[in-house]
Image (cartoon, rainbow, N blue to C red; front, side, top):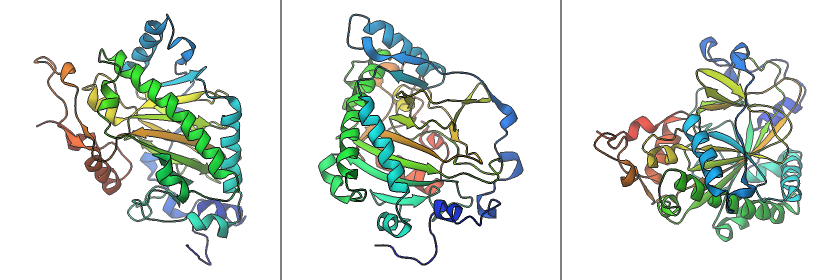
Length: 344
């Protein structure tokens, strides 16, 4: 159990009331700071999943195909997860981050290889510039392998988070099937490439920031997984890069933001792209987001689907294990790393 006399977490430094400017370790170079003048009003597709398993499945698959080909981002409604499960999970995240510091620090670790941990920024051991967030990272599948490592305070945390994780996994598997089929592959193709499968969840807490134009909650990056299913509270902060401009993805109540990750880009042989996105912060409101990352097991071998490789469209990437990919991410930092896996 971690104990310390000084706050390790950003949220507690902010809550002390003594922070009226951003500490230097959070400040990005001038050319890399968020330029809010470059953020445009736009929207990403909202796909109704009500007909995904009905007679209009082909229409829904076509919408998914267009979204994945365009920018890799869409939102889904009528996804089958009850509003009560969503509300309970968001409330549980708030309650956790409102716990006393010493209680939260029972989950603290700066070791990125630890499956279940509370930490801050991204990788405090290696990064040169810190990010304006705290987060609780939890491995969720197989659930019985990890749930005993989850927090026990708040008292109902494990029950509520487990119900949420099980529900989101059902949705993730439906979407993986649909994306596979939208590529012209068998609906089970992508799922079969993921080994024994894995699922990770993060509870992100972004405190109010006195100078939000100097830093990021998370700077621009792509997701290294198969699929991300994001639950947002009512505070805007997610932005994606589209046609050279940043687009704000405003929250839609009870909807999930879906974005494909690097592993889908590889399997699709670049037909679908993992989009650059970022989290910005503001000076007035805290923000909570809960992404679920559906991913391969470490030993899964990822590469372009043979059906999508032709003489005219040769393989863009070599095969690699997901464990190898993960080592590249944690060593190199939060940025695009698929260049390391291009076919020679």
